[in-house]
Amino acid sequence: MVPVRPGPLGVLATVGAVVLVSSGLLPGGGTYAAGPVAAASVLAQTPSTAHPQRGVQAPTAESAAAATVMSLVNKERAQAGCRPVKANAVLAALATALSEDMAARGFFDHTDPDGRSTWDRWAEAGVEAFGGENIARGQADAKAVMDAWMKSPEHRANILNCGYQTLGVGVHFGEGGPWWTQDFGY
Image (cartoon, rainbow, N blue to C red; front, side, top):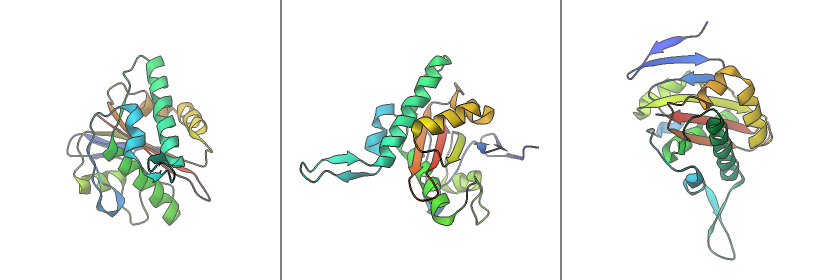
């Protein structure tokens, strides 16, 4: 049975490791709102480290993995006849916060140890036009996590939902992981 809860903009439902919602919040009080952004720009919207010789920003392993996931998502969407999703910095920050929170507090769920569900966190942040969330843990790289998500009907449905217009990808590499999160928006 799928728990369903009405939300401010629509129905919120949890299906396996997928959450379908309409608004939301991040752990620690961060906020996000869905909106279009270019796929390649995910590197500019995620944490990076300075390149010591040139003084420029080099992508972190996490931001590079997130960009690869974005590219693979859009490849799958193109094959299904969907428009590409565009990277969204706010959704990426929310997705990253969830991945980091799961790693730090040792849980793997859309509901954190404090009992706050994905939609509770998003509602606290005032997020509107949120579509859905995929989480995964343990896949070594972007291709492996995308393969796993595409083999799961619920995760695949989020990735191939042609109504979604934006995506934030969060990755945390560490012992016991990596932890992966995709947050989709309209």
